[in-house]
Image: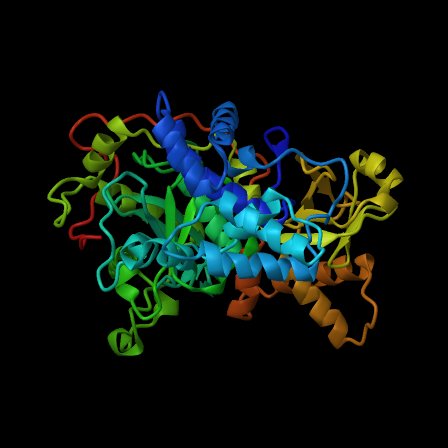
Length: 551
C-alpha cells in the first residue's frame, strides 16, 4: 500500500489554458514568495508580467504561501458547472487574435486593459458578445514567450528565453540544473538462479551540474522509458540511506533533492505527458538540448562515458565495440547479477564523490555540502506519491465491475460510490507502473486523491506490462480473436513454466525470468532529510577505484 492518500489537484484534470496560466503565474510568484516582504514596485512588475491587477498578485502570493509550493496551488477553484464554457465563438476568437497581433505584439507595449477595450469596441461594432477580461488574458498567456517578448521588447530581451548559442549557460546553484540520460551498460549480467548470461542492462543517471555530484541512478533490464526517468527522479529526490541499507552497501551518498531544472535530450521518453505534467507539478523546469548541439548535455555524457570505462574493468564486459572486445568471450566471463551490478555502481559513485575533481579542484561531496549549507535541497517525504506523478497515464470508463485495462479487471469496494453515479462521470485518469500491473492508481472524479485499485481477482499473480503484452501476442498467434482475463493469465503462467524449466536453453528465457524476479516495492519508507557531510573523507566506507576519469 502507499504512504497515505496520494493527492492530485489538477495536474492532469486542469484545462490546458488554465494550467498554462498557473505555470506562468508560478514562475513569477515563486521568487516573490521567498522574500519576507513584497513591495508595491515588485507587485506592480509582477502584475504587468502576468496581466493582472496588483491586488491579484497579492492574492496569488497568499495562496502560494498557504499551499505546498506547487503549481496546483495557483489553479482557480473548481466551478460547479459550465465545463467547456470557456470557448469563444469563432468570430470573437478572430477579433481577439487580430487585436493581439496588431495592438499587443508591438514595441509600444500596450497594457492588457488597452487590449481588452479594443476587443470590446470591435465586438460591439459587429454586434458580437464581448469576451471577459479573463478570456483575453488566457489567450495572451498562450502566446509563445519568445515571440511575445521579441515583438514587445526586442531580441535582446528575449535572449534569456532562447538557448545560449554555442556555449551552454553557466550553472552555479545547487540542483539548479540536473542532466539525465540513458545508456546500455557495457557488461553482461547473469540471472540470480542459474548464474547464466541474460544480456546487457540499461543505466539511467542524473548528475547535478554545479557540484558534479551524481544525484540519481537506476539500473534495469527494461529499455529506457518514461517510467525509468520517473524512477531516476524519485531516486534523486529522496534520502538514499534506506535504499543503501536495502541493497546492502555501506557507503555515504547524501546527495538528494528535487532539481530546479531537468536538462535532457529529445528522446521520446523525455516528452511524455506524465513527465511534462509531473515536472510542472513539482516546479521542475524541463529543458531540452538544442538539436545539433550535443555538448549542451556534455556533463552527463562524460559521466556515462567514464562509468562505462570503469565497467570495462569488470568481468563480462562487452567493451565499447567489437574491435576492442577482440576474442574476449563476454558471456563466458560474466559473473555479476543485476543486484550486484547495482551495488557496484553505488560504490563507484560514493568513491567518486570523495575524490578531488579536476575541473572543480575540490571534492564533489564538499562542494555539495558547502552549497547545501546556504541552500538546503528540498527532499521528498512521500516517495510513492512523487513517483505516481511520473507514471504513465491511461484513461478508462468505470463499469459495474470496475476498470478494464489491457484485458485485466481492477476493482475494490471503494469504487462503489463512483459506480453508482458512473453514468454522470467521464473517463477516469489511471496511472500504472509497467513493472507491476497488479494495481492502478485511479484519480477520483473531483481530482482530489488517487485511489489504489488492485486486481478484481486478488489471487492473480503480479505481472509486468511486458509479460501481459507477450501473452496477448501469443494468444493472437494461436488464433484467439477475443482475449479474456482467464486466458491471459493462463498464458502468462504457461510462459513462466516454460521459462523456469528452460534452465540453460536460451538467453531470452533467462532474461525474461530475471525481469520478473524483483517487483517494485509495495511501500516506500518515508525518508528524513539527509545530514550535511562531516569529516574529511565523505566516502570512506566505499572501496575507492584506482583511476576515475573526471565526470
